[in-house]
Image 1 (cartoon, rainbow, N blue to C red):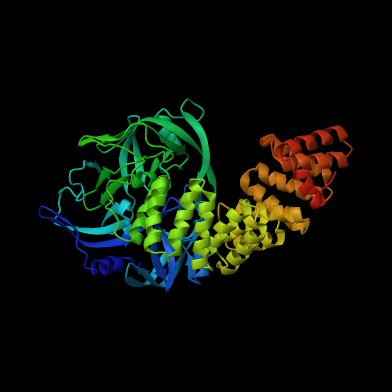
Image 2 (cartoon, helix red, strand yellow; image 1 turned 60 degrees about the vertical axis):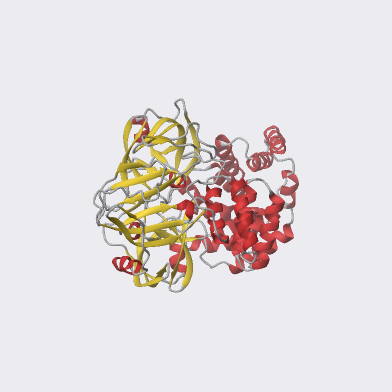
Length: 590
């Protein structure tokens, strides 16, 4: 492993940190980061190609997604025998890739290794920066200022290292010591008075309490205060069920958070809790690996439930902290340039403070009107505020400034499709498909949008490209189902469609949407009894699937069950009044 060289290179940058008493925080390397889509993104280069990496303190080693490694044409070899990789979604296969050069900040490191594997990452991320980089020294997570700093303390001993605190209260908590085999940032917190071993994971968008730990804290699915939430997942292939739990008291170091909410889910046998990015966004955090301590200051806003401000503000032994999710983080200095406003706006958007985010993006766009990224950022924030027309106007500017940007084209295609501008949406998708790399994760979204425009062969082509390089991805069932559905609607390659649906069902425990797709395949093939069986199973799980009601009605009429067929067709028209017209255009009539 050549990562040890990175510390020496970063130290050579000559950046000096602050000092407290006789202690100095020298050899500081500042990594410029942006928060986007609940991820901390860091620019870097592999073999001269510009990329974005997720800063992931929960990853023991830096990683590349399989699609990114393929697009970069990197040589790979199997991971060492016996090495098992585990994410929230379970174990996953991995290999090791070598890059000739890796450029971080302004320094280039030769012959670098990355782990390759797991589910693909949401665009534009190509991989993860893990603890083999972050754990080289101390780490200052100053996300409100758009920076993660790597620090090498000198002569600090037991000195207090919250060098930014000024008059603000800060909290201190012990963390477990790290070494070459134990890299993660781990400490003990209290949930409803129960001790829980927590891993601090910037790669997890939300804080998650494990089911076993939740049960010890009196929180169990189905009981009062615990309600179902959307499934969650990580690098593993599978998704896992999640719930939202009401927490009476959460304590970390000297800080207490009362009457809050957080997710609970099965994190496997070895992880009791993940403290995710939502917590990091509301705090300034200094991980002092040199002292086996963590220093943290609450800087404002919701801590866990980012949809609303906390019911009661955190408090600490150093004083009460005032929470106001409507204002910019008080720990952030006023930006001086467009990039500063962009970074602060991104943090505000990640904290769901979209109005303030738009105001910062306004400043960024005014200061740098030729930078398409700022208009794209403002478009996404405006969409969160349901300001569709201004968002579309921003994307128009972004595309004009950078016509070959596949992400901006795809985002605009989605908006144009919603506005029934099918020609415009199709033109954008064609441009995005032409500009995206063959292995891009974005192709899954492009395929889904083509499918929404009834461009079935174009959709199949995108799903083909995505599936070819994502055989171990948790989104694989959705891609297989999408390709099956596109072929079923088109009435073409039905044997291949059936194979896709069967493969998706083996991965999804008979998900109703896949049963619905396979039902249409059987209907197209004239296998009416099998179609009815699939539609029965789909509707047993979700009785409002309009296509299943319609398809079952058609199949029942074909088999002579007139009363049942008529009833199902009538029920389908209630759920989707225009479905019969669309089905007739596809040749699917009673």
